[in-house]
Length: 458
Image (cartoon, rainbow, N blue to C red; front, side, top):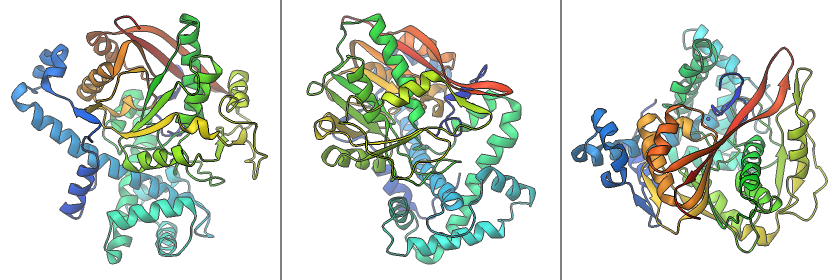
């Protein structure tokens, strides 16, 4: 998720990333895409024994549980679809690759839409028209190629695409307006409530790696001799088009699997050749991307959040950014087009590093991996998308996938999470606040990292 923008897990201290389908076949097709695969097992009522009383108090019983789970799967299909289409809208507004028209800042566009009685501005209609022409072109631009496949599969009737994109723009801008101009004034609880109903974003950013690196550093300090061999990353994401600040100097990439491997090796917690990292995402497009990276490691372009006259990256974050890649690449590639105001670097992971990486499709609320248990599970900027009931189900699956003594690392500060993790034997161990940047005249940009350890010997 894009740091400080779409991620509800990254926040300014002291307080903390629906339109119906037009054809039933589209809904059915997407629902099938996120069903449990042969490598996953569906969650059952018996798996949730610690939560039976809580679930029953919410009207979910043994008799109704399967129906509830099916409703969650169907809603997740909608949320995956809307998350992809959100990125399409943000791309349509900001990209400079398919049109010469000036970019439009989404929050400004959202306010203009609402202030003008939901009338789509002329400059937006012009950009959407240009995008449709570009989608019909032979351009091989990586983002345009991704969105071409999305639009053609979601809206197969070409004559209806302009109207469909206009509807998606209106839906996405309504969320942005509610977040930026309504919920922000009401407080963090109102923002959090929006995220528990919105589309499932694929956003990712280098800053999430800094949070994980700090958490792994704590783990190393607590247990210097510990060795981690199997790792599960839930929701590694894909950098497509964030809500604001779109950069197009490199193809879309999933950074987190690579930065996790790099951090584990750099801290001496893992050895290449004895490490498996599973990137598990609900979005099949993300899973395909990671699977392809195993056989064809991508050239990674890492870009920090921007510095300005008022935003200053901390020395700790700078040191982290400087050393990224030391464990997975043989040196760095000279910058092709550095981005002014950002830290910037390019690197090529070695082929033997890519062999540590695998990919699985997983909806962690409704299913779990059926393969061997893992030593470490990482879930950053994922848990805020779940309501409290879904959180119980997801944490039950997390606990089941961890080996005894295994560690769960996340950045969700919701108080209810403490009771839920304790109920499934995930003992809380550490919480640390991480500062990414200072902000002149305001609170710093921070995140938290939390560690839980599963009962039993490692």
